[in-house]
Image 1 (cartoon, helix red, strand yellow):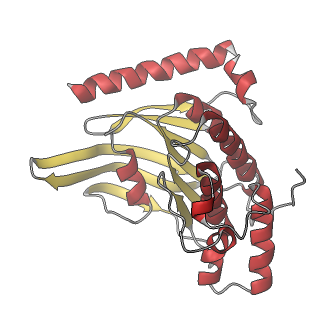
Image 2: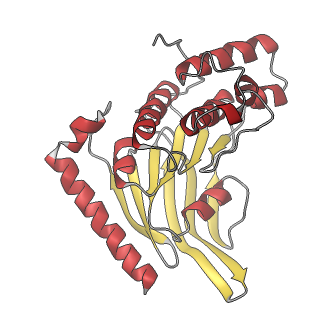
Image 3: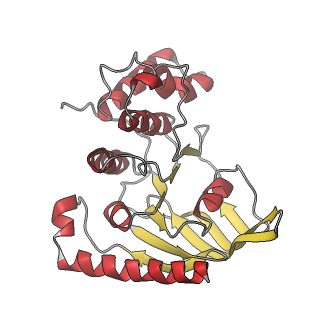
Length: 274
């Protein structure tokens, strides 16, 4: 497939890690339920620097999605300090890709991808050029006039990713966007996401339950435990980029790191059940 060059506004290449873009210090979140107060996470410390691809990994119920919602401005924390760097210029600071299908069913593929740009009243010529680029990049050229009900699950997620990148955000928050896909589509979209990220140099926080996915995608893997949720380990992924999935999995070093992270997850699940 012949790919058009994407044009992103970047301050540095993707491998140039810069100043912090998100800092959490002792952040906590509590919910009131019928059974009483539930503490999703507490004393949560995390720093994400510009250009990093950080994967957040942990068992169900440790507060991963609650944390992402707070960062996205959809919820608020109860304690601690959260600092998010001021946006540069007038473009959107962040985009969010959810686990559930979140594209608009009444809009075509093309109109879904263009939605954010048109909401900002971007020039029509710029909208058309950028949408064309992104549709080509995610392999949806020829499907632009279709509607979501006419697409496979993998194609819908491609639309979600293209729409998220269309606004050229500084920060991309992703909540298990590939969890419902079959292995083949999941692998293809993981590679596509890394390719777009390497072109754009954006900062990514990616939530997943998959150890393989976290180690393939991330610069760092932050392992969460519960309850309440907290950082058990912050692991720098030692494998150079670009990465090939099957070659990576054949590496003894990769197998050892998978085993190390799996043991952390096992311990976290034991604590949660207790």
